[in-house]
Amino acid sequence: MTAEVINGKELAAEIKAEMKAEVSRLREQGLIPHLTVVLVGDDPASKSYINGKKKASGEIGISSQIIELPSSTTEKELLELIDRLNHDRDVHGILVQLPLPEHIQEQSIIEAIDPAKDVDGFHPINVGRMMTGKDSFLSCTPYGIITMLKSRDIQIAGKHAVVIGRSNIVGKPVGQLLLNENATVTYCHSKTADLKHHTQQADILVVAVGRANAIDADYLKGGAVVVDVGINRLADGSLTGDVDFDSAKEKAAYITPVPKGVGPMTITMLLKNTIKAAIGLADH
Ligand code: GUN
Image (cartoon, rainbow, N blue to C red):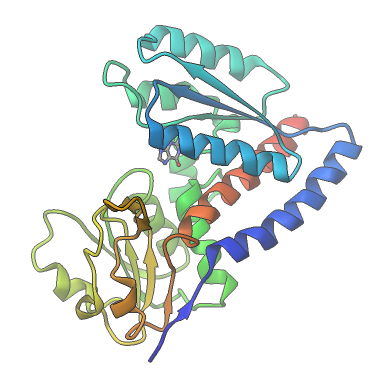
């Protein structure tokens, strides 16, 4: 079997075209969705991610602003900025790029953002609403993954989904979203005994390990759906995922590539959340 490749870049382009039309309607009504992105420090990977977010916003008519602060910024200063953005009626979405410098408590910052402007979906209110199946901002990578599966009408209900990774940003919420869609969910992580035993039973395997080629065909059940969340930069500068794509695609039914897989979907879902925030705040 050779897997069907789910191209996240193409799907993202389709969704962005729809959102562009929606933003243009909102603008005609005088509502200009606005996203403010805050970067503390000068991590090159973070800079590249936030520039991607700004570019994608501009493409569909969302206004955006990047606030860059030095790594010496104190937690108090950052909290003051967030307070100001929370009260700024023209700012609909607030995203503080992670990771933050070590002297700043990430959780304090996440909890300071108004949940109605939390387009990352990281605030405990949004996490809790997601867990209880209520309307909420969904964190962007998990939301993008579910959207990719649904775009191909891949059945989730009743399937065994195995998630490798338990981060608050990806692993935990994607498992929860799969559970909300009635999958049977297994979480694996660095302490899991006999990882392969679990992955070989996966109808849907989500890989967020953070190591190039950590998973190859040997780890898969034939006909599995493989979602690769990894972004690893190799010595030659090229990007690769956590899955050995060439071997896995001979055994899987569907697979997401890297690049042009989950990555472009993550940014697209951020834009979707920003539009949702703008409409929600305009209604109040
Ligand atoms: N760092 C890596 N991924 C993300 C993300 O989705 N949101 C934020 N705020 N920071 C990140």
